[in-house]
Amino acid sequence: MYSAAADEGCHIFGTGCGFEAPGTELFFPKPWVDFGLPGTAGITKYLLLLVVAFLVVAAFWYFTTRRSKVVPGRGQSMAELLVFFIRDNITRTTMGKEGDKFLPLMVTLFLFIFSMNVMGIIPGLQLPVTSRLTFPVVLALAVFLLWNTIGIRRHGFGGHVRARLVPSGVPVWILPVVVPIEALSNFIIRPLTHSVRLFATMFAGHLLLALFAAAGWYMFNPTSPMGPLFGAISVGYSGLALVGFLVFTAFELFIMAVQAYVFVLLASIYIGEAMEGAH
Image (cartoon, rainbow, N blue to C red; front, side, top):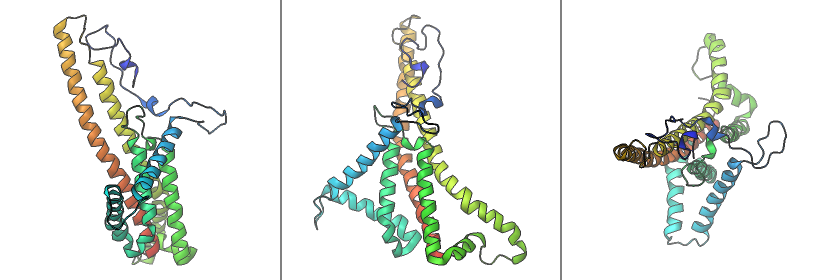
């Protein structure tokens, strides 16, 4: 399923074919529809999963809030807990009560990123949308543009740029060194790391899951031509790989939630910084 090593007939203690670990080809599915235009990928599995993630988020809000009551039911309580969690642990800690107006954005961003991440462990889908760098980059650029827009509207273009380039309390004589560093850090490295952190974690995590799955299948050979003893050993090896796959899947689910949280936390910190002005 994940590599040539998982092909039927290629197993440990079998015909002698070696194990081939899954590679980056997992992240480049062939397009179902190719428009033939340079710089476009056509319609691929990523696009389908992106739509599925969007529908999951939309369905969550629809089914949990369509019959809102003063005394919430189970679904409404779940939605409210999520909103309060983001409010109390992210927006208010980074922006104060003024951050409440950004709460819908942050909650939606968290759910959307988490849904895109979870696509990587759903049977039959098994490809996190955020393992394609394009998607985290678009989200990070949207936050970057919002950060600059808020800063410029609050403090003017000059005030926003000066706050980002000239840290308060820095002696004038060292500004020729500090200003280029601040410019590189705030306007280039910041959006780059904001996107790459999410992408790299999902990329590596999915590759490890694929490795466990492919290795488990490769080591499963109960009818080994080398005899029943080797067949039993192969089943034991495969069982260990299965346990590792299940444990790491649970861990990966936790990491998916953490990465969505970190992305939203950083976005909230950036916006709060733009609202505050000078640092």
